[in-house]
Image (cartoon, rainbow, N blue to C red):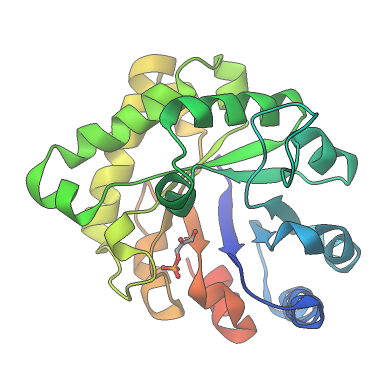
Length: 253
Ligand code: 13P
């Protein structure tokens, strides 16, 4: 049985006291209200990870992710954070290949493959993000495009390594736009990606990989999205910054 996962990507938001307030509020409310087997992964700015660890440790459902890591092991790379550093403070997940990193920091499929490798070498599970632009959806083989992102960044992995990866499908046209993909559009892509994984690794492995949907997820849209057979939870941006809204998304099924 694959895990239901709801991850909150805070992006470059929240000051230190606000980050502590949000994390502690989420843990407190979730301890009261969230029943069942759901993993909640908070992805705050890296500067807050050590502090927030203390707050989330009181809940077995919560974990932390960094929003990025370097593809290099260590050395003269000013401003970068290594996967080994994340491991040294007990971080379990890292977002790799978010469309904002691909777009603003020119991260290629090849570079992302290196980041996936170094995360796994350090015992950290990559949450690998993929997704097409509006132009690609309208004018190209958009499913083929996203399948290729996965082939180029993940298909060098062994089945055992792949099973540590979470995939997040985030159509770029739905990110921060208020325009959520319909459950049918998301399910179409998720099923195609699972079939793509099955083609390479076999259906038993593919069935175990959690594939999250991201892009303007709200409490209002989460129920229908998460009820789709191949959607195993969400990667939430804006709506993860408000405790009540995010808790309602965590509770959606
Ligand atoms: P929004 O939920 O704000 O559209 O952001 C989605 C996202 O990019 C999560 O990684």
